[in-house]
Image (cartoon, rainbow, N blue to C red; front, side, top):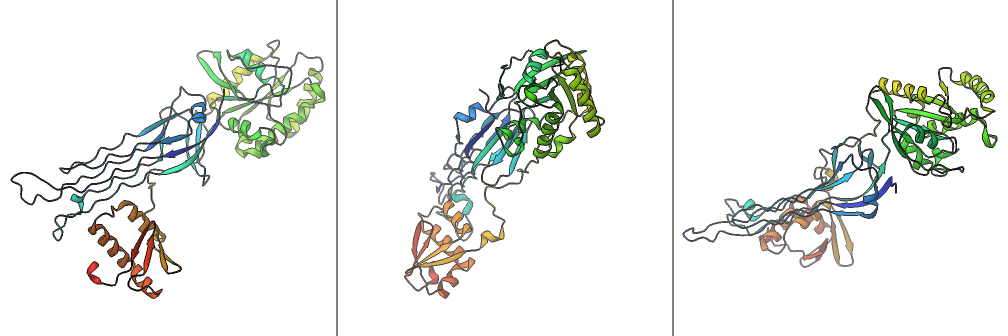
Amino acid sequence: MFVDKAKIYVKAGDGGDGIVSFRREKYVPEGGPAGGDGGRGADIIFRVDEGLRTLLDLRYRRIFKAPRGEKGRNKSQHGANAENMIVSIPPGTVIVDDDTGEVLADLTRHGQQVVVAKGGRGGRGNIRFATPRNPAPELAENGEEGEERYIVLELKVMADVGLVGFPSVGKSTLLSVVSAAKPKIGAYHFTTITPNLGVVGVGEGRSFVMADLPGLIEGAHEGVGLGHEFLRHVERTRVIIHVVDMSGSEGRDPFEDWQKINDELRLYNPVLAERPQVVAANKMDMPESEANLEQFLKQVREVKPDIEVMPISSLTRQGIQELLYRAADLLDQIPDEPEVEEVADLSERKVYSLEKKEDEGFRIVRENDTFIVESAKIDRMMKRMQLNSHEAILKLARTLRYMGVDDELRKRGAVEGTIVRIGDFEFEFVESSSYY
């Protein structure tokens, strides 16, 4: 089963929590804080494995959750970092963020990898909060949440030469003749519904990978039929062999077929119009083919004088070897670098955009007698704080005061005892400066 598209959910590991701990050793009076930091959560990494050919494994396992970091330990010991989760994907996979449509990576080589979800940082233990003013803090942080997102994976077949053309023009037969591939062949349209790959040897130690791509129809660039599913695979090929049925079976016009397929390629991706192309004038063993070829050459030369047209017959093997040699020569002239999408730079990406100025603001909404404070910065802080200690509450209160939340609440009419809600927590507004 060939699977070339999959949508999955990834959740990197949360950071481990820091802990509150103190030295309790004989002959060590006033030992001080000794709570260690939590370990870092695991990243989720996609890595190319050249042994894979489809996304089948990801079709049936759609959720990937990485382990979280270990909690901090006493005696100032750091919790262990979680081991990163490696997900193997086939070469030619494009990774797209489902929410934004951003191309995160386009991986084509064995061993290439990208971090698609970063693990959260570990929370700090109370040893990190010790100061001369407060040498024994009872304050620690929770681990940071790991990144999560939905991702769409699209596989574009990695082949040197791609066979394109209308259905039933003989693409599958040609591949079966020149390689050991055994594509399905039948006397009806759309016999091939998934790409078939074959290794073609041309002697002198030269070989290349040829792909029999499913037949295209008019309107494929707009998604008619399975247009987009087929066309995405053409983008990877370095040389296009355009197979045209010269016998004119089913009342078809070879020149019109050639024009329509080229239009579909150009409308889908203008780069494909510049890709080296050889026309394989197939089925030359049929009686009408010679006359049709003569007319075809006259018409095609008027549109594109430099186009190469090579008469072949997959049945009698006429012209097959010459076609393969020509494809190999073209490949020798083209750098062996596949076309790739623009890749997002993930090296500096952070789980949270801590440096964005808009995150520093806040908004206050009144709901009956309750004031609701909304702020990305405060929400992040509260997720990380362990609000089960008096010191943590004081730290939160100081932060609210420095941000100007207290002053804004007073302007909105808050008085002593007014209920203030932040996230899932509710507090009483207190005027006394002793809490700061």
